[in-house]
Length: 422
Image 1: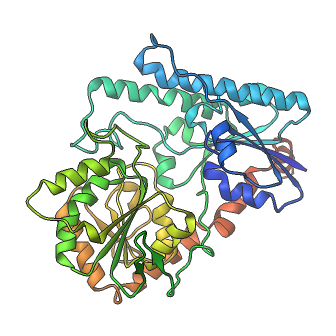
Image 2 (image 1 turned 90 degrees about the horizontal axis):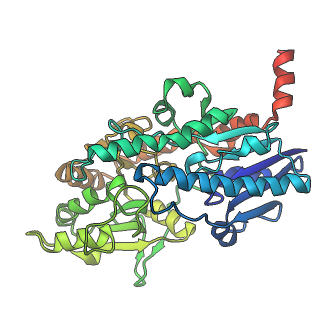
Image 3 (image 1 turned 90 degrees about the vertical axis):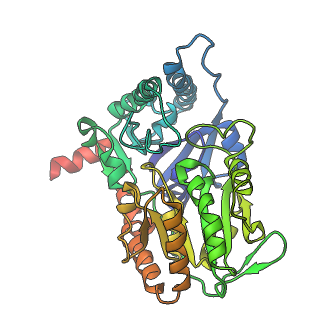
């Protein structure tokens, strides 16, 4: 029996499919630690024991602003360490711990379970320039910001140094880590369920007002966890007047929340970037037919899947930052993707072969290219199918990601025995 402990403040996070799979295996005993709100929000299955910890207090008022993130991570790391100590006192000693280090939860795991194999999820390494920071001239950063951002890596560095292994979802994400630490990191994506996410010519998407969209109509989709600049929402919104004017039958479906996952808050006086950009467009010279733009907010997974399946073209924009699942999931259902010509997207999409690329900041070109592709949607169907094949062969959970993760779930003592025999 291999005992595995998952740790993620927002359970199940990136480990959803792996945790679900392990419950089908009688030779794995799975425990998960996360913040109480996440543990209560989403049951992980009858065979996963979950332990919640209270959200730690924030940093003190006099904490240097460079260290606020660091202090918050230390507090969270302490909360996880206490939960681990309680587990140990109960007699549970994991063979393998899989943890996202971004919020400090991996900091002290090895102090409690030194014999366990610690695998950390290396999603990103912050840089003061050259990646996401300073990429968008509309949102400049100060010298002070750059210094503060560099300090954010302190927690990631300590966690990766303590870990036995790291995993990064893409080659680009692995490559942004320092060369001194990169040797510990393996490239393995969390995995896409390409059986569940597949083309459906009969898909239907019912809109809140009762109207139904199908593949018979021109539909453009845009998806982000939250509608914000990091995911190009401002660029996308500013392309709408030209898009809608260019095709009077086009329906635009936007899925995502009004919060902020990354970067700075919306402009003063606006509750969200959606509100701010709608106000900007309504005050402009060009009119926007908002009746053809459907903001669905955060939706159930089945609704999200149906939206992708009826889509004629999916637009995905991102800073040089973490690649979203949504782009790969759109490709998995066979919809052609028009993505930003930025490094994380270029790793996956070859323009004109398995998708299409467009400069991140050029709203006019985005609109014109989208209109052309939608007008030729039947002629470019093979590109969408090539995109699906890319995801199936490189990012499928069952056939690509799972074998690597199962290797990583080998306890340290078993790995040592294998290496000695070899």
